[in-house]
Length: 115
Image 1 (cartoon, helix red, strand yellow):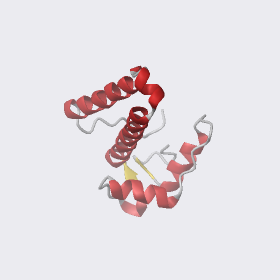
Image 2: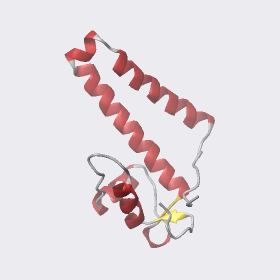
Image 3: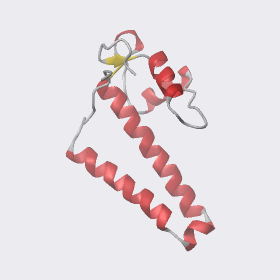
């Protein structure tokens, strides 16, 4: 994502990187979404509106947690899931795993620089 190899990413680098992911449907990140994600996690951008590695990692971890929580909530409300709760159980285990990892390895971000 860090095409300039400076140890931080801009909104445009993040949006372009998300679009390049081989996902269907593609991820389209608006500037407003980017700002909301940063604000909701208490992340502050550095010079020129860029995210450093810790801020980027914080946003990604928060978004993964929110995704899992939405899916757990949906699974618990779905009558089909209530008959076979293995899917919701796996999501709960994933959430617990993320929480334990966060406790054990705070700020465990990996490099944004291209390899």
